[in-house]
Length: 405
Image (cartoon, rainbow, N blue to C red; front, side, top):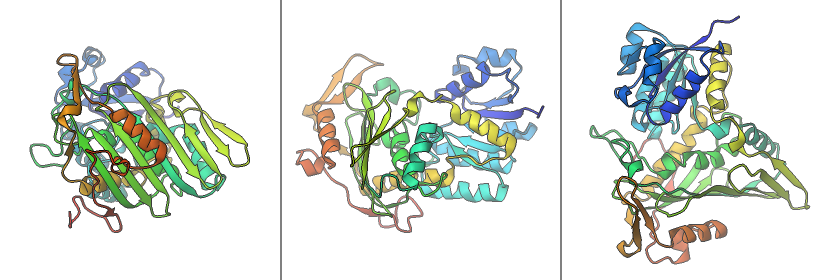
């Protein structure tokens, strides 16, 4: 039997604790050995006692771990602004890397990660779990083979309320930069809903580990919460092949719905109604093809795919090149509307008490649904408070913020 893959987990709070639980709950299957965890605030982890009882060493930084140990696979579930440096360090120490989404805050950081990966001769996977899901891979293959014809317009809608506790859970939520000036750009489109903009780009990629590249980006960015960045984002992206991608997402709404998508092709429309409902392709000739819901796949399939790939030095479905397109769109959106628009105070409502107080905007959910249905931006519906950003060309876009931004 092959030696188990040695795994380092960076980040055991928040989403990182979910990774930790997956590893601890499958510790006896022989595929891996958890050789260390990193978190400067490890005392907040609810499974800290198990780590101590199993003798798993805990470090305050990846540097501390690598001074004493090595790992075949580093799983990085740390804040956005740490992804680049920690991924590069792990690569330089000989580890393969599974880094949580997004790849990094800026395209220049992603490019640095790519360069470091190439020098190290290792791979980096980015944890967009839908990209590891079989239904998405099947749908992507059908798009690549031309089953639906050319892509025309891909629309995605996600309305997820997030209350005060969400923005106070750490010191970087809703932030543009950290105290040292490092870019964070935390927002719905760059964090909780990043999967769904990435998914539209990823499905149009010409290879398994590729996404469609954006040609230009226009954004409308808004906020109701007392944060630095937006809590509501609307993007229009044109790809280099001419497809239009529309993304609508908000945390400043009262009730949860989505994600939904409707992808229009020359010969078919592919719809997803959310949850465990199937993805349905309806062809112009009346025929129908079903794909399972990507949400029915095991959430941590991405982790086990990376453990297997580390054992076999195999390729992974979603790496840095595939993830870079999403980061480029996020950067383009921030350049498009560098000053966030405030919703009118009269339309902002507050529900509940601290720390679960929810700030939401009256009528916003209905407006975003209308925009999604009609394939338009709020400013194109003549919404009084709507403001549209400028169009940003992504040709040769190598650094955020853009030089003319």
